Image 1 (cartoon, rainbow, N blue to C red):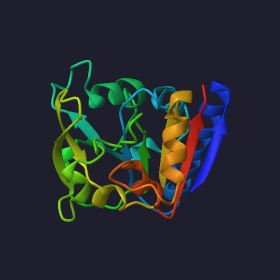
Image 2 (cartoon, rainbow, N blue to C red):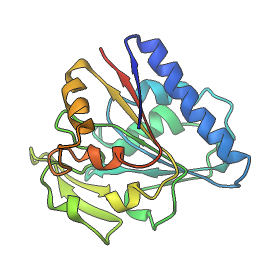
Image 3 (cartoon, rainbow, N blue to C red):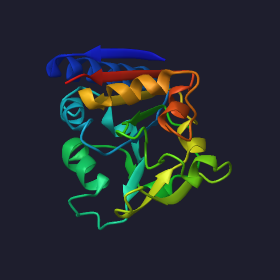
Image 4 (tube, rainbow, N blue to C red):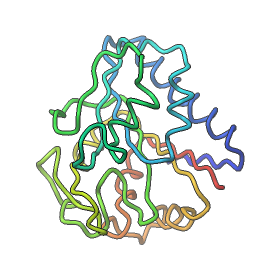
Length: 207
């Protein structure tokens, strides 16, 4: 796991965008299809906005949604709505898949965030879905009970060549440090499972 810590927003955006672009360009040179799983939330928005300006062969890219709230696609809380608005709007991408359309393809890149409670995707602490061993997609709820959700499981997310976490906020420092500790268990900090993938980078903006 590589952790890149930033104290300046512009540096964070540029470095994270550069890293994503580098992965996509590298994959494009050897494959006709690039598969990328993308997350909602607030942390990736500025990176998505900058990424769409880069000279990437978008026509090769298939995007997969990591998780979604069970709301209409045009709802203000819809991850798909945010991703289409901030990243995909007017880009000539190959295809966009909802969470439930995922059927087991290996991802070339997964972009994830992490919540204050250590959740990633919609995999929350102590949820039974953390122990799912066969299903690629499951329905779940946040601990607050706000909106039912659908999410890729650990099984799906770990089926990837590269994972990049985009994390913002001083208030997430403690949970990020906890995720790195050997004694921390996945049921307490679900993001720890994904951070143990063999090719992970974390871009952390500490402000």
